[in-house]
Image (cartoon, rainbow, N blue to C red; front, side, top):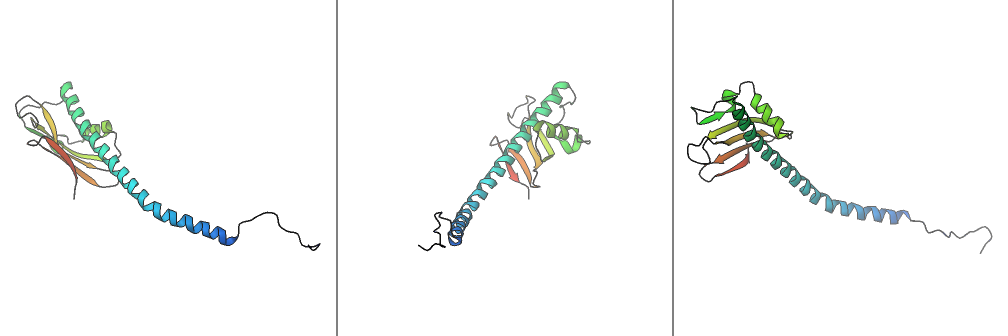
Length: 155
């Protein structure tokens, strides 16, 4: 060996090797990102579904609380619509607070005996409108015949 030449004992990565690793990582990221987006979308849908359940429960709780306090008299009518008798939006605000949801409750309709079909004074939420944080609006409708309700996107 010549006196001026030293042999490098370290093995460094070459530029080509680094580029190959970056290309492999980019290919893996391109394959993984679309599947992750699906998980994110499903998580958002589940979040909105949980918010919707909270709105229904809160609507029923708030009506029962008002009725129990004697703040509202539920005789002589078969249906209560928040637009008609909650002019200042106090009940909707209470429902919003009880539900603790980021979106906005815009309407609730209660119908007498929607579940039982007999005159027992039972009130059920038969319609509710909820606008999620992302701006999408949803409507809950209850079908007394099938005794089930469902949320649908409001178009």
